[in-house]
Length: 402
Ligand SMILES: *Cc1c(COP(=O)(O)O)cnc(C)c1O
Image (cartoon, rainbow, N blue to C red):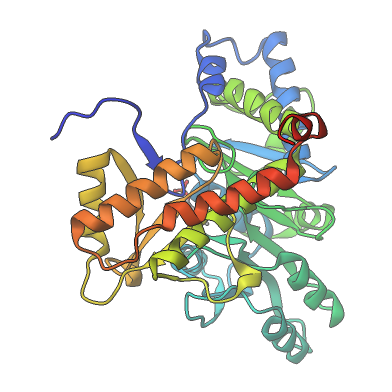
């Protein structure tokens, strides 16, 4: 292994880099999770999480990865044999549907080309045809991390409502929450699944479910067995800031800090920053003469950009060249995209100069790996970011630049 000085550039779309402020906030003694002090921490993070999910309803926090939170969503709302409608947006949608089948759900999987999001019109047509209301849930991945495509959740909600279908709406926001605009309550989502190590800027280890009244009512009568993931057990103790089993105390310290950082910046500004960085990334990719995997500009992900390798070039070899020479990790192509795409994460603790460093590593790596491209993509990204900065510059700074 080559020895590298300086910070590693972790430009994968999760886990994302953890801000120093969050790391310091977690550097605390573990406390008694039945103590009054813990209760205050518990209440702070449960209340704070509601702001990030944009909901006034309960948010549950499990010591788990995102996969655990997927499972919690399923076992609390559905019964074996229930029909559910899912959409093949990419690798993560494939994994969630595999899990659903393991729980004996009758999955109808709408095929997709991995370059588009879930189609609201197709969902509407399918639900309209389901006159008997046999479909119990619609399950969609908001930001498909394997492709860099973001599905239009508000439009899917409208599609469900327009045909008056009573199905529950379950959404995976594992890589989007805290990076892309997402409104659990306004968009009428019943269960929003998320986790800590992507937009939340925390280490892995926390899984989230934000739930609606309708989802909670479904949990009272559904037939799926569960114990560890049971919402009601958790909600009973959460009322006073406590948990039914030992929570991930130090991750909760980190969560409190991460929520504070997002609210200080302002969620709107957080979302605008991600869009800006994503636009700059696409400007670079376009200049290089490469293709972004996502085909619909209305579905470009603000979280990551998946870039297609020119035919005859291996994305994994290119990523290895970048890692060995410039100490930067880029995301790999997953399952059927292996070797065909690489992914640039621009989420969480990321700003203009971090991104430009990352894009520089990509451009230099392409030269080293012999990937055909037009030089100057970084300059194209710089131009875009400069224009955006000029447009946003406060008045007192504009004066001195006259
Ligand atoms: C990362 C990811 C998952 C899996 O989360 P884990 O924490 O690895 O279990 C699921 N869905 C999406 C969209 C993801 O990005």
